Length: 392
Image 1 (cartoon, rainbow, N blue to C red):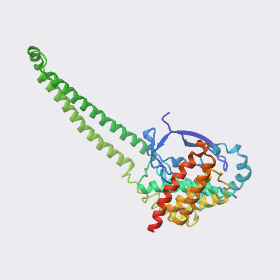
Image 2 (image 1 turned 120 degrees about the vertical axis):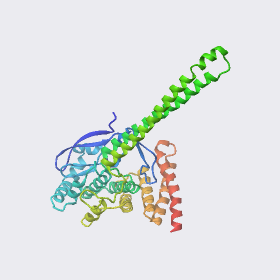
Image 3 (image 1 turned 90 degrees about the vertical axis):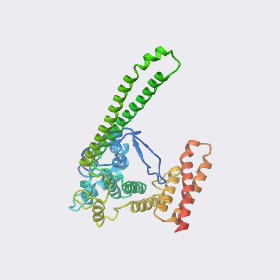
């Protein structure tokens, strides 16, 4: 039950390889809040050893053989029952994917072979999301909303990389986190023993110093005073010695981490496999495929572009809360990339559409809950956008 993953066996629709993918269980972690573009502000895994894991590493599933990539959902698991996919998308995507894969300079092959979620978890998340975008664009009618969602999540990963949240050797990092937790608990135990010893010492002192007992009985009690002090001093010495040994243990743990994980400085500009850096690897490949993004700003630009296409077409966005949310995302992404006029226009549209929807469904609180939340965000971020536009 400590394992936060479900194992899903899925037959690749392109090459028929049976893959086993890890899917994050519902409730495996909690979020510490969400940013204004809905990126988690931080997460806490219920099992500490997985604290180094970024759930976005497991957001998509990449075939181990042909590198076909798709968002890991129950819909993908049951693709054989999806008549729309099998009838209108599969053959075209399959033919194009295999054609691209056969090329010696195939983007699919170079991305797929570079994935290593254990050594480079966040970089692998970026690669897998790019592959999902690549395969989506092979379809005759690409889902613009999904493309926007994928680029948005690439932006989130880059944001974490910029903050230095980039553990290497994923599973080892998780084990190290668990070791740190256990070491912290050892220190807490010693703190607790020291506190209890001081409490006991005060209790003995109150017995010895009390004036509310007969003199002859107190004389008998005083005969134990030195023996108590000697015993308590011995225990205090043991605690002090234990603290010294714990400090040495802490130094050993840090040396152990340094030897197995390196400095852990999270610098995404350092080497990536046989490449000078991850950025250089992506930059070189972008010459062949311009849809690659190498930083958060570029990712959010692409996300805004595809969200707008989805919003204009209306085919992939349901009316109501999803439409309001898409409008808000266009506004917020436009604000983040510095397009303040476009942000102002979509914030205003979001507020008007949200207010109309809430009024029309005012008797149904559950249906309007999401719209109310987005409306509050639109008002708040609209003010932030206005202030930024004024300064620019």
